[in-house]
Amino acid sequence: MRELAVRFAVDLTTVRDWVKLKRETGGLAAPRLMEREGDQVVVVLVAESSDATLPELRERLRERTHLAVSQATMSRALKRLGLTRKKNALRRRT
Image (tube, rainbow, N blue to C red; front, side):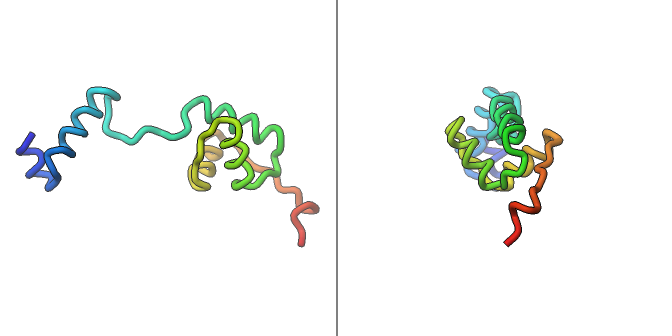
């Protein structure tokens, strides 16, 4: 393990953490914040209010699942799920 730490210019503890993560999860990628349950809730939220903004969807997701995600994460989830948010032009005008 020391050789890996030197090779990648990281601390030995980092290498140990990587090995542990690989054993426990089978990979080194960071876990997705929104797994299937979060995705399913997003589908329901968009169905309930297709004109909701990203901040509104984030807040509703947090209320239902106690999962706080960034606006970028919510946007990627919508894209991954093939969902679009229909804008209500009359409602949004100022």
